[in-house]
Amino acid sequence: MKKYQLTLLALIGSAMVCGAHGPGHSQRTEREGDNATSKDLCPSVQEGKPCAASAIPSGKSFKECIQEVPDKSWNATFTSAWESRHIHNGVNESGKSGAMTNEVEIFFGDLALSAWNGLGLGNGFEEWDFSTSYNFDLGPIFFTPGYNLRYAPSFGHEEEHEEEGHEEHAHKLYNNELFAIIGTNAIPYVTPSTVLIWNLNDSPGGYVAFRLDGEVPICKDTFTINPYALLSLNLGYTSKDQEGWNNFEYGIQGNWRINKYLTAFAGVSYSVAMNSLTHMGQENEFWLRTGLSVGF
Image 1: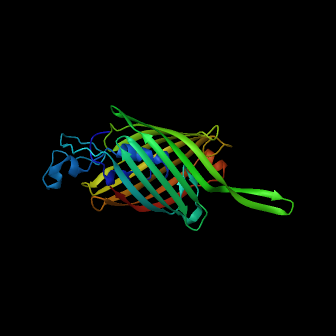
Image 2: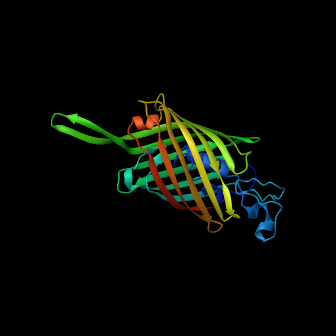
C-alpha cells in the first residue's frame, strides 16, 4: 500500500461493497486503507489556497501535489449501522424488520483483521464473521486473498415432521470461506474488481461478483458520494438447486466526515433477483443503510 495515512472517509466510502460482511469488508478496507485526505496530500487545500489539482479521496492526484506523512504502524475503525433489511449476496436474511450491524477492523500495513456482527430487529437473524486478508499491489493491479469464518446460530428454517405433528426449527451455519479480490486502481474515480468466494464446507460452494465502485468528491475531504454496481454469478453458494446468474445490484451512499475521527454515512441499494435467486423464491429487494464510524 502507499505510505499514506488511513482515513475514515475513504473507509466508509465503500461501506456497501459486497453486501455487508465477509470478503466485502476486506475489499473496501484493503483498497481504501491506503487513501489520504486532501489535507494529507495537498496542504494548500487545507489553507484555502488553490492547488494544481485537488487529490481525490481514492488516493489519486492528477498533478504532483502529494506530501507524504509519517508512517503509522496500525489503524483501527469501529462501525455501527442500521439496515432496513440485511441483504447478503441478494438474499434477504432479516425479513422486513431490518438489523443492526457492528464491525471492528484493525490494519497492520497490508494485513487486515475484522470482526463483524449482525443482530435482527424483531426477527431471529444473528450472524458473526471473522476475517483476515492481505493486500498485494502489483503496479496498477491489486490482489487481496483472505479467509472468512461465517457463523450463524439460527440460520434459515427447517420443518421436522413427526407423528403427532411437525416442528419448525432453525439450524446453525458454519462456513469456512476462502476469497480473493482482484482489481485495478488505475482509473480515476472508478475501481473495477472481481470477487471470488469459495465455501470449503460445501461443494460446490462458489460465488463470483463483477463490480464497479465509484468515488466522487463533493466538498474537499468532507463529503463524498459513492455509487456502485455489481453483477454476480452463483456457483452453489447462495443456492445449490439452481446455479447461474445470481443478482444485479446497485446503490449509492453519501459520506460526511464530521471530524478527524468520526464519519456519518447513509445510502440506498436495490437488488434485482436473477435465475438462482428467483428459483429459491427470493424477490427483488430495496433497502436503506445508515450509521457512524469511528477511527483510531
